[in-house]
Image (spheres, helix red, strand yellow):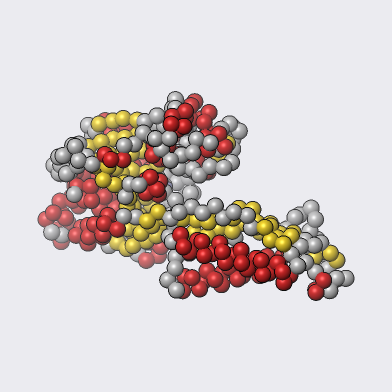
Length: 438
Ligand SMILES: [Zn+2]
């Protein structure tokens, strides 16, 4: 991978390139020491509120102390590391991502954003650049709680607690899949204060911040396929999920019953899924953003047989889109078609609630600034939606403008084979440093 020659860039851009490259040993050391300390033999195992998550936080804190940053933690274990800016009373930047990982996860999902924040701060320090306002690097706890806790909850525990938008009931309904105990108990055991969640006002004073900036590896293949090192995120897709859909027909003899007397749950469900896919293709062709997935579809193994007309199908249905109107349209479309098919095919559909989650649109001004920064710094970049959820969406939902930088990553994510090139990480971090120096 050729690096952008500093000599070919204008002086200000070359200064950022030199400073970020000089700070890269900070990043390498953090990735290596944290990776070595928090593995499970296959990949990373930084379970929320576990010893490993604490170890990662401690190693980040030690590096921040070396960099002479101001340090604090909140009641939920989130770590804050602040570089003072020229105007300390003005609202500053807050940047970072999550410290935890999925089971046997990769080392870069989440951690890259915290390390990028510290590396950017180290670069600014080394180059003698005093940012206009304070820069706070946040190491967020328990973003990946969904991978460790069953039951009704929405993950993103650290950010939503700090922002005061976590419903306290989730601390009890989230049940650890290994211990069987609720998240509330694990958070308390780790030395933090789940009871503070009930106060509902969080610990972050948003009036102190200009915006949230999050660098994250891309968890899909787009940047790699298109040969670009960096993406500027347009929005984090929202979702509409019907988790427990059922089509009920009637079990009958597969040879003896003519088709006009059947209530075939499989054929009815297949027709519905096919029409949903056709509609999704039409929405995308007319410029809409949409993914559509039937992640489960099954007949009852106790009752099904090759000689029976299937009497029941269970399935789920997930839509994701940057536009809430698209999610609502697709939920209505599924309901409308289910009603029509049910009447025609003598079955009953129960789709249940789609429990929509709003998309989080990234701040247009921040996005424009990041695109300008990428051009000024000689970093090839493209606009890209985020299909996966990130802490940034919680800041947006709490009312703080946000932006995200994606860094190219091979082999997907939520697995031990995540592969991010340090040259790409340096480019993303350089863009972050440039943005936060403004
Ligand atoms: Zn992540």
